[in-house]
Image (cartoon, rainbow, N blue to C red; front, side, top):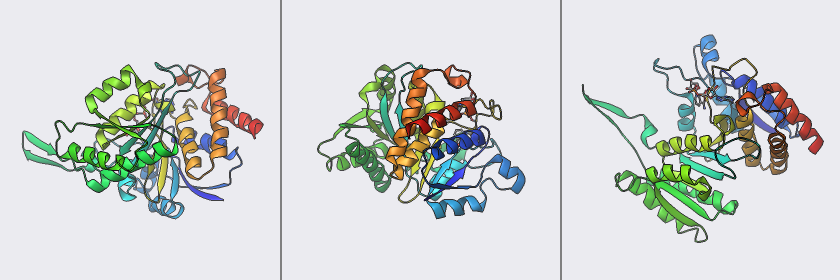
Length: 335
Ligand code: NAD
């Protein structure tokens, strides 16, 4: 029996979390879901965006599946996601970007994974006002932070038989900061002689990803570049509704969809739960439940290929629950 913290979140979060849980449970994996919530609804009731029971549950279970959370704009709130990443040192943000047959997108057969450093870079929130007309934002890169994310990327490549890890950087301009990251990548690469380290400057990387994304297998990069590349990559495979994510530290992991709370479609049973479900599949693999992860993936692939039961964002007219129930039936047949 696994104990997993489930944080439904805001907007479409509760709808996609409920159906994802139902689909995962259909594989008969023994998960005891501990449901706690964070976000704007909770804030309105309790005055706290992340109540203590959320932290307690994550610390106890060490693994969480999380829906999107609305970040109130302009009220001095720090993003909950950034808070969680920092608090638990979830240094590895992993985004798998894979095409599915039957899903309309600009490219086919994309299969890449982006490892984004999640705790430093320009996202440390150190901005200073020098005078009325000048501000500075500080980018921090450390040997420890860079080495561990590059290692995570190479370990993934080794485990999944990938031949090339691409490091995206701007060391030609940011000689110290990006230079250190690049040097750490070169050092780590020496321990993996069977895997090639390819070095690409970030602006060229963006162009290459649009021209020929199939050339990339595993990408590793700093926080801001990784954030941008990940959304670019989601666009290559049919949009945010298809992009899963994971935030992994030494002993705690939080799995979540890349997209936000989609307030425009919240409460309408229209959301596509695929991104959260794919995050759930990654969670099952993290738990070592590869067989059950494969069953859900097979059911998803079949559903997309048939193209009969799809949510609106994928060109269909199924509701969130119809799509989910269709998958549940398929999984039951595959067991
Ligand atoms: P968004 O991802 O919520 O929505 C962008 C567009 O994509 C919308 O048109 C939405 O309807 C559509 N969309 C997103 N997910 C979808 C899904 N699963 N199925 C179908 N359509 C989907 O981005 P936004 O509007 O910029 O952000 C809304 C809120 O979410 C903001 O408060 C933001 O801070 C928050 N946010 C949270 C997270 C997170 O918790 N991880 C991530 C990004 C944004």
